[in-house]
Image 1 (cartoon, rainbow, N blue to C red):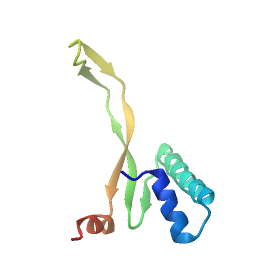
Image 2 (cartoon, rainbow, N blue to C red; image 1 turned 135 degrees about the vertical axis):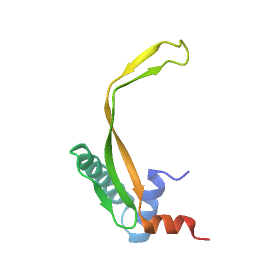
Image 3 (tube, rainbow, N blue to C red; image 1 turned 180 degrees about the vertical axis):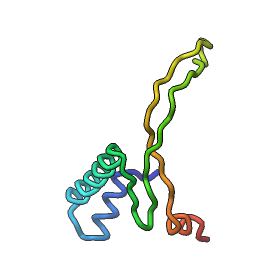
Length: 93
C-alpha cells in the first residue's frame, strides 16, 4: 500500500525536485488542507475531489465487551467526495 514516502518519491522523480523539498511540499499540502477544514471551509482539488467536514451528533453506544451503554460526545469528521476524473481513472480498464 503506497504511503507518504511513495508520494514523495513520485513527486521527486516527476519534477526533478530534491526528496526533502518534495516531502516538505506534501507536508505543507496536508497542513493547509487540515487548517482549512478545521475552520469550516470545503477544499476542492480539481481532478482529485473535495474534502469537507460534517457533524456527528452526540449518541449512546454499547460497549461490546461489557454491554454497558456509553455516551459519545458530538464531533466533526472529515469526508471526501472523489471527482469525476478520479472515478474515471479508477474505473479505466
